[in-house]
Amino acid sequence: MIWDRFRIEDRVAVVTGAGRGIGAATAVALAEAGADVVISSRTEEQLRKVAGEIEAAGRRALVVPADLSDPDAAAGLADRAAGEFGRLDIVVNNMGGAMPVPFLDTSPRRLENAFQFNVSTTHALTRAAVPHLLEADGGSVVNISSVMGRIAGRGYLAYGTAKAALAHYTRLAALDLAPRVRVNAVAVGSVATSALDIVMTSDELRTEMEDRTPLRRVGVPEDIAAAVLYLASPASAYVTGSVLRVDGGIETPNLDLRLEDL
Image (cartoon, rainbow, N blue to C red):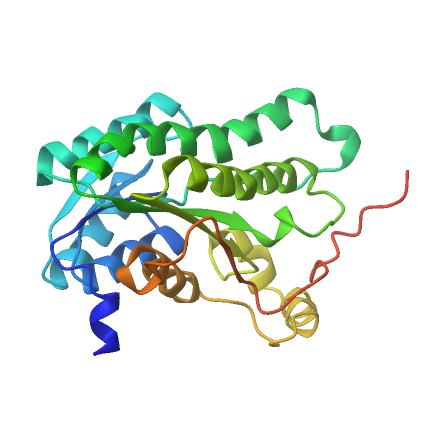
């Protein structure tokens, strides 16, 4: 049956930024498809709640509270997974982000921080994971990029640049690690997570965003989790170096930050 290709029974995954939102939904989806999951973010209380959902799905969870803006902390998750569960098959680099700010407020340090938070930490964990993935006879890496890595919007210089770099990192790493390790990404559009609380609690802003999105709605974390499961599972065994758009069809920013001309 085709569903069997989406099963990841008895495999082990690491998901960063897993305390809430896309990371939490992804960790639970992977568990429901059969994986044990290492989950990490800053807030232990959030992670414990996600761990309960993983265990309710009949799988094991390892909670690792950490400041994953530190590349060494991110890299350490690979050994934690292999040490706890004996193998590592799937890495989901979900951690990332950067607040939108005007151009003149985007200092070189802010740009460097966005790159480290979105790209350097991804590389640190992926690099540390590769020996374990190879030992498990191959594996899958899924990076969470953004629609802002391919379209232009005012205020997103640091974030968009970092996410564009992450998308191309995905293509380059896929070639370096083929054929035994697949590397893909999901380019995420507007998703109802805590990052969009201001939008989702304003009828005016939410309606603007919905109206500017071809599918006329804001995404939910499970939309992204489903795409990650596809890329992590044998269902996508002939896919590597791809950046899968899950963005409601937008080609231009669907929210005007109302930044004035200089």
